[in-house]
Amino acid sequence: MLENYLPILIFIGIGLVVGGGMIAAGFLLGPHKPDSEKLTSYECGFDAFEDARMKFDVRYYLVAILFIIFDLEIAFLFPWAVVLRDIGMFGFLAMVMFLGILVIGFIYEWKKGALQWE
Amino acid sequence: MSFEQILFYLFSGVLVLSAGAVITVRNPVHAAMFLVLCFVTTSALWLLLEAEFLAITLVLVYVGAVMVLFLFVVMMLDINLARMREGFARYLPIGGIVAATAVGIMGLAVGRINFGLDVWPAPPARAADYSNTRELGEQLYTTYVYPFEIASVVLLVAIVAAIALTLRTRPGTRYQKIEEQVVVKKSDRLRVVQLESEGRK
Image (cartoon, rainbow over all chains, first blue to last red; front, side):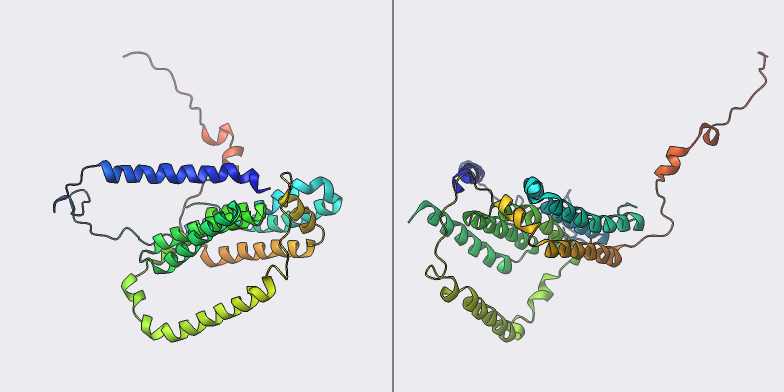
C-alpha cells in the first residue's frame, strides 16, 4: 500500500530541495555588504512604533471555530461516501441523523446572526 | 535497515526536533509554525502505519483548521513575552513533577511490555489496492454508530458554546435584508411624476 505514496515522498523531497536550494543559492551567491544604515529598521521612513501583533476582533475566532466544526463534519462524510453501497440503509440513516443534528446547530447559528458580518 | 525504517527515523527525528522547538522558540507564531511541522510529520508516521485516512484527516483538520484557530488565539492574546518568562524557576519543580509523571505513565502504557513485537506481531504489509478508508467506514457507521452520533452532539454543543461565548452584536449596525430586496416591487421604489410640458421661453 505504501508504494502508492511514493510520488508524495518524491514531491516532498523535490519541494525541500527546490525551496531550500533557492534560499541557499541566494545566500551563497548574493553580495553581502551590510552597513549600519542597511541594518536599521525601516517602516516608511519612521522607526517601527508598534508591534506587528495586535488584538483581533473576537469574531474572527468565531468564524474559525465554526469552520473547524464543519470541516470535521466533512471529514466524517468521506469514509461514508466510500462505503455507502456496503453499509445499506442503516448506514445511510446514521449519516442522516448525524447531519440532522448538525443542521440544528447550523439553523441556530444562522438565526443568531453568527454568519452575518457587521 | 529497510527503506521504511529509514523514513520512520527521519520523520520521527524531525517530529521530536520540531516538538522541542515548539516549546523553546521565543516567538509564539514561530512556535505555531513548528506545531504545523509536528502535525505534518506525525501524519507521515501514521501513513507509514498504513492509516491513510487518519493521516490525511490530520493534515486537513489540524493543519488546515485548528492551526488557523491557534494563530488567531496567539494573535488575539497579545502576549507579553517578558512577563511570561518570569516565574520559570518558581514553577520548575511542580512542572518537572507533572512532566515526569506523564512520561512515566506513557512509558508504562506504550512501553515494551505492552507494545513489543512479541506481544503484537507486525501485521503483514497490505496490497496496493487496500483501502483504509473503506475499512474504517464499514466499522464506523455500523458497529460504532452510537459514538458516531455522540460526535455530532459534541459538535452541536461546540457550535452553541462558541456562539454563546463570542457572539457580540453591536447596536445600530445596518444589515442587508435580502428577502426584502427580493420582494420589492416597482411601486415601492419608483414614483412616476406627470409634469406639464413647458414650451421654450
